[in-house]
Image (cartoon, rainbow, N blue to C red; front, side):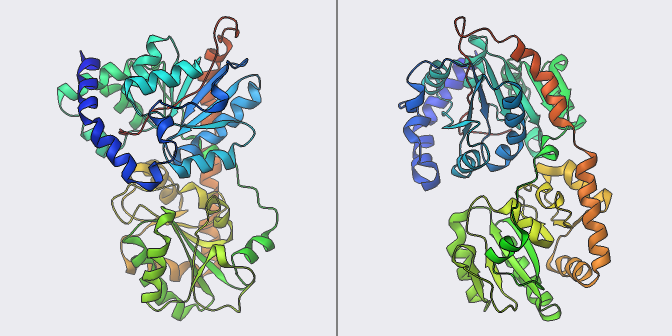
Length: 446
């Protein structure tokens, strides 16, 4: 019944979904592939290798998927790995971080024909999806083809979980969650929540957060990296990563106060959506700041207070290495937060706002370990920056606490692999069945 009702509703909403997709420039690439109307050239012939399909909707999920895909590839190089994403930033991350290991595809929309076309082309023996991207038609169809579906690094935010209070909604999600072979969740809270929504408790396991196991980005030369950012040897970089409108204004206001007291401080803003760079630059120039774009910096400058805009993709994780203090965006406004571990892994003190629903456990961990601090206002930002810039010994102690918190919580990757491995040992030969990898579509995330 639920499958019939869901698809009726989906078909009625199809014109709106397609219209929204076409209206957003960043969603247009791969449109025909998303609709199931065009295959990737390498999918046209039969693969001689079993395929593992991993779905990671965007950049944050790709970060979590990278160590998992890399580890699976080391254990099972005989398999073909397909990683699907919804966003362009996700695609770029796959190509940059998993080049030579996995191939990228755009995720199909959850229309029955699009899902069926992707599964028919890839014929997966294992489907792995990251952080609770539940697409009903995808999961129902995979179940009908006896393909194991594994949720890894699963989480359910408080806001998402509260939306499922109505019995009729829980009944719907139960029909979807009962298709899952394994639910590997980040925390006890997440495990309890997905079981309460209808997942079979015998298939729910708490394995931890794979993002703690992400590899440290390779940096060939500290000096060349600083040079590429136009930083002099004695300047101190304050890096605000994955920022959103509303946060940037607060950060710039705080920096204006700090720069008067610490003229060696340089602010770098890395907008979450790179297409906003022009607006961010205009805002900074209107406020009277000297502004540089990372893409236009060719050599060291003469120094002095200024704001650098990180307008290139794929550099943020490495850039945190050069910071003395970091702020992670999506937290001063109700977005839910982005990856707090990227600066922490370098031993950089981390600031974040009160809205950390998407990274609640990590935020609590860093704050409790003394490696991070919640800030809620311009005054809070100024106070923390003043303390950490003015007292290097305190800054170093906080940074080391952040790094140690990451090291102490690694191991989720190994635990997840232990649960997944039996399904790979059971993979039949190609003559019996081909293996593939895939991903869910564009519609909703729990």
